[in-house]
Image (cartoon, rainbow, N blue to C red; front, side):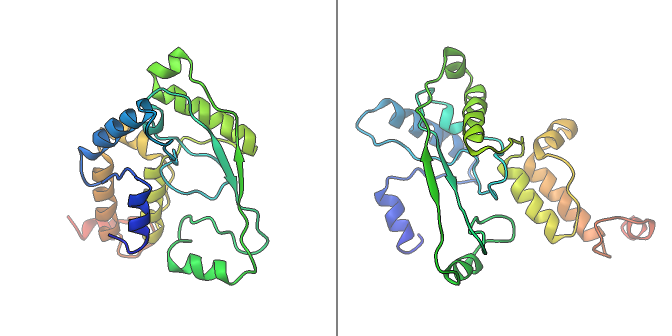
Length: 212
C-alpha cells in the first residue's frame, strides 16, 4: 500500500509476513519451501535477524530462511562512517534518519559475499542449528560477537525505553520461565507503566497501594 515502495516490492515478488495473523508465518514458510525447490524462481533475499541492529553484534537468526534446508549465500554488510551512523536502530529511525543521511556528503555501505554455505544432514533436519552455524560464519567474517537476543527483544526494549524501564532479560527466557507469550509480556509492561506514576522504572509502596 506504500506509494512507490509498495509497487517496487510487488515487482520483486516479495513474500509478505503479517505479524498480526497467527497463520501468516506458516504461509511464508510454505512459500519459501516452494521457491527453494523450484529453479524457475530467483533466489530469495532474506535478513535472518528479522530487524536492524547497530552492527556491533549479530543477534539470533530466525529459522525461516533455513527451513528449506538448501544451500544459502551469506552476505554481510558494513556501514563505515565518520559522523552519522546510518544504521536504523533504536530511536534512530523514521524521517529523521533520511534527513541526517542527507546532511553528510555521502553514505557508505560495504557488501561482502561469503562462500555459499552447504548444510550438513544434521543442519537440514534442524533449521535452528543451520541458522546458528551460518550466523557464526558471518560473525567471524565481520569480526563481531553473537548474542541470543531476538527481534522481539529489540521491540520490547524500545517499549521499555519509552517508559524509562530498565530491561535486563531476554524475551525468550522470560517466556519460558513464566510460561507466557510475547503479547502477554507487552500487556504486563503496559500495566507496569500505568502503575509507575513517577516514571522512574520502579514501583514503591505508595504506587502499589494506589492500585490495591
